[in-house]
Length: 447
Image 1 (tube, rainbow, N blue to C red):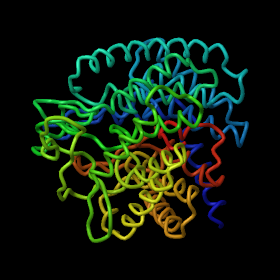
Image 2 (image 1 turned 90 degrees about the horizontal axis):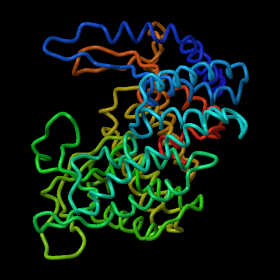
Image 3 (image 1 turned 45 degrees about the horizontal axis):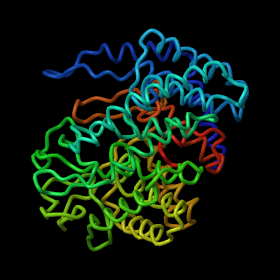
Image 4 (image 1 turned 180 degrees about the vertical axis):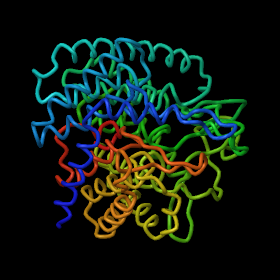
């Protein structure tokens, strides 16, 4: 069986496992009702209006699949209808990955042309524009006050302005005023922020990087990831520039971020790398000027889509392409080759999914290989694909169980970021040599 034939069969297997909403709901309801571990809290693994783990994720998968097989258009429509119904029952805005943004993005990707879902897309366009203006007003007040954010949720890809801008940029008829407002706020996010006499980058936040407290980040952190950090705004500003959406100081902002990464670069015997986050101790006090980043030795980040070298290298390529800076592409290539010389770096990867698992690594590596064909990168993509296939379990309801060592069990996830719908999309993209027919990759800021 050829690689393409095997991928096609795997996609069809996934399509059959996820096709019945009643079955998906039953599996998720039983799982979410399971007895939590001693002293633990129940883990919610299904959210109806979530692009990560709900109906919009499944509409996204079948919308792409329907481009190749029209028999799946009905399934796409059904899941999109369920997403709309859930949103009507509980209307809310939570960025790109939940609420109006999630359903609007799924509807845009499901449309085969400008005449598909016209009324729905128009209604969601209005709701999304309103949500963006509300979020913009709140973030603009903070920027005007010159105070650090208490977290990245206001401006990141998952819940914040970057995700809203991503959704607006994907629409065929975007609310240009709202989109340009988002871009302007993200440009301002790159202006230095002075706290107690110390200049920090404008995206400095006072919170910890995750819900698990880490002593090193007790004083806050600067996040360098794609999902929650400054790589997200960098990617969006670059993609928007290429599409002709340009605001004052946009190019300057991109240069500011790239210069920051130049300062924050760390090295080991293999070459450059960047940590996931920088603590307060990395920034030195000065009377004026941009933030100065001290050199230190940080743990290797581990490869993934949400954090680490693959997504960083891809974002550097996007910026290099948009602003004609081949030196940025060269920096990306050097970091990627260094990562490939550290086989132990991949040892922390235990999941199959898109966000921080083998599927995401394989997909980003194939996107990087498309940017600049390199046999080593192609081999790394194939190796990640082999690990993904090794995680496949025909006895699992959605084929790819997700282990959670902390809770001592595996979960069954049908969604996009951590689940089987996302895996199906990456397999479908690989089968078709990365030529995605719908812009689902925009939800990952990959193009």
